[in-house]
Image (tube, rainbow, N blue to C red; front, side, top):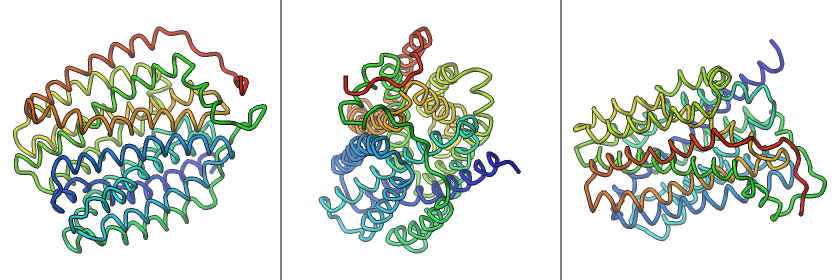
Length: 395
């Protein structure tokens, strides 16, 4: 077996176990806050804190990775911190707003940071891994599919307070699997990277437009976590239904992740991104039309044509648009300004819309809003590519 093949298999194993662990503190966060007794406003405040930790944390860790020429060490540090905060977050079911504002916010924020670092580590380690990123990420989806019902079972049988212990065990396995993997290959610029050097990223029009497109798509995507889950619970759904939804859509992701590399070569990341925008339109129309939890679960199967295409194409496009010596910063800044910022905007925006217009009307509006990123992607496709070079520092 070739070294490249062995490397892919090892990263597949890391993704599967890591994502299995990620489901524990994340998938039932909203049902947990509802059970504790937090109001929609209080839940929104905690979710906003989660987003802020993710936004600033990813920007800071992206810079640190490029500054100190390592991703692996920061991945280890943040995944350990995630275990600590998730243990503290679920240790009590008492209504303690300020306590959970800190612990749940850092749990969710660190979850976003760790995922971003794992992606950066994979994409910067070997060019062979970039081509096969979809297959590697598929094992993350498999871990998520296993972890979602497992989390529901642990909570139903042993309570929320056992989530921290389960996460600790799985994280130890993740660390053992990844301990001897080689670090990301970092290319040093002419001088040590400083904060102002990261400003090179936002001076590139193609990179900035791509981040805006991803922000809009992720705002739409985040509605699946907030508005769709709220609708499911409001029409009689249970924790088991929520876990089934997460698990089912994670399984549906697998085929497209496995052929992601082939699709990138065949059609290119830009066309895949365009197709994903169209499928999000269809998906949210279906979510608005659904009248039972089972119908919402069935519609979530369209995850097959949305998230895998968005994930694979966006990671490769962002890496391609980023200066080589700022690749970690480029990947994590884009994630913070798209995914994490979206999780800050979405609960506030869609929470207001649901109260004002209703859940179904909000979901119809989200579907129509898919036209905006669709048009921006068409514009992005026509733009002239950025020359490939290490840009001069400190200018």
